[in-house]
Length: 429
Image (cartoon, rainbow, N blue to C red; front, side, top):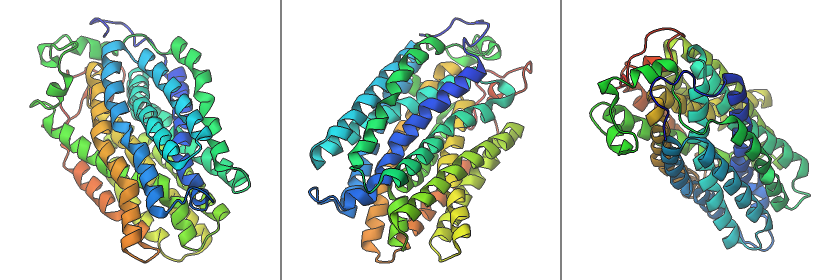
């Protein structure tokens, strides 16, 4: 369901939309990073016989549910509005985390992580699209980027909670905090518009023949048509590379630090620094991106991920290692936030949810592969540094893919307020 052309407003104010998106993704970040925080405790569970390969499999099971959630929610968000799919996703995620907390065996725990992955996968495209549509066009990247830092803030919370409660507490207790999204459902129902509505410039542009005539037709066909095909495929591949880094790091960073001689508390400090760097770096990069440098910002963030991971593998003074961990956080979570902003920036509101859903859905193969890829590298290569080296290849690949995007852009999402908009101007052809 979509708004009719000429809708005067988006139905959502930027401030409340950014705050709500930030809170939702903060909770989602907690649910994502909790597996990495409890990883060392899982490896020492007296009954479950968890190995490094098992930990990688659990991370991949979480990621395996994400494409289903991303694609279904992105598509549903364009057809029925953001409100209903977002509400269902929040309830789903809360139930899955509750089931993780009470899981009595490893098989059931793995199943609940798959269900959690579906909820996580659904919320990211919905929240990104919702905030993108409410954002001030002149501050589009900054406002969407601010909301997406919620993932990293959630990771910080996870690190603090893990350091405070582990290993004294049963690790499953930490999953009980994942039920919090239930209290946000009434807020979502009040603040999120029931239908997809464009900015006035976009709504006007959508009346042009170039905007296409599909209302509930095959949006995937449109994404793969001549206008969007090149950018669509490049976005899918770049998202794959970014999510290999994000989900590999979220699952493995604390454990890799333990393998390099740091105790559990120290490794969690590195995880906190990782996420603080993601927050600060994303906001800084978004400010630069709003000056017409979104492509450059994204390329640089990928390259910083490679440099930081190499630095983390070498013995250095503790302050430098913490700084490198912060840069790695920006290079991982910050980079993927910029890619998501790029996708939202490149598509009109009526196609945005589907574009984000498929970009994240197809790219989720990287999230599935990431934890097991890092696990395989650490098993096949005996060096404790191997896990860090594993991240360099996807980081360089991501920078190359973004570099292949051409400079055209959909101006209605980034031009100053009142500036003329081009209807669906393709980012790359």
